[in-house]
Image 1 (tube, rainbow over the protein chains, first blue to last red):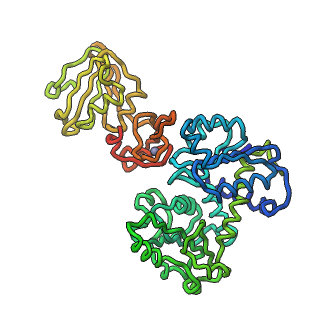
Image 2: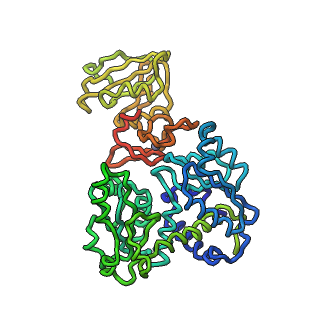
Image 3: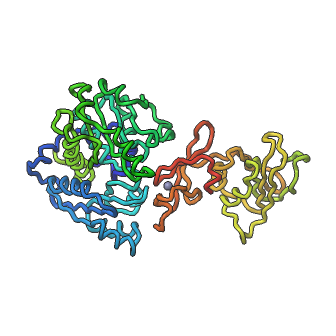
Length: 305
Length: 154
Ligand SMILES: [Zn+2]
């Protein structure tokens, strides 16, 4: 039996669930790299994207196909015309008759939870507005586990900490692993204070220079132009949050740099060729982690072992 | 309630008395109980009357009707101090304090405009209720928005 019926929010998972999925992902890595299997042969996954996210959609599609399953897609363009004539509830009811699981990306917060209440098949949340994106969080945790150490890790989160849902979910999940979290951001993009309510863990606002030599992970996020009143202000702020070789040279040899991608200019391309750069690896890890999730939700009986 | 000094509205023969309501919130209590314009219940109400226990309080009396516990407990969302007296033939036959339900549907409106509960989907708002430093707070089951001062969202 599956441990859960849907994947809506990282908060629905226990530490045990998370560790289980990370372990499963590790088992799927060789399949993610091309070893053939038929674990989900005959199963159909529906990608329902009400807003475009090519990267996430392709990652799910790859994961499903590598497991031997099939994929049907509703693109953002198609979805927008469906959305005009039909409620999400009805769309979900219809598509859950076609597919064995549904991946949903939708602009409204809580849409995935609502979809799960109207679906006869598992719903996987691939981002609901500013809300949740649990597969991103899981692949971030997986990257840290594989390329560094998750338990007790010292991690600095840098960039837009106010609006980044990636950062918000990651912080919550990290507090399960006895981590030390450093927050580095421009004053106007600070992590909202109420966010820390009820979180217990070591979390502290710092400057990058103060912690660069001791951290295990540097997680960089985009600083988006839309957040600023004018171009000038944006350039000034974003320019002072750029990672380059010079800064990296003061880090531990084992320190890894992560980024959810796409980047704008937060990480200088000269960092790419260093051993620290793990953001492309991180993008790859999205495949085995999504395989683990799909397999957990879609397997028949006790699974492949 | 038997104290004559505080008897600003008349006793009822049979029905439900909601006492010790946070002052000024009696109208919201009626709303939570579904007593709206054009309702047929015989209701009397007092607002901002003196209370030995609370300084000031509101009272609502609903004549000829025993409101169910589940309905009454919803009052705790805005008036956690409220006490309920069920009256039969002018006597109190049961007295209890309200306690907040774990989940409420369709009572609190989520203030987040991007929350699916505010869309035109066939959906009821749903909030999980919890106590934090003895205050009643709520969190939207859809978008996760946390609310204090629940009376502002009812
Ligand atoms: Zn909401």
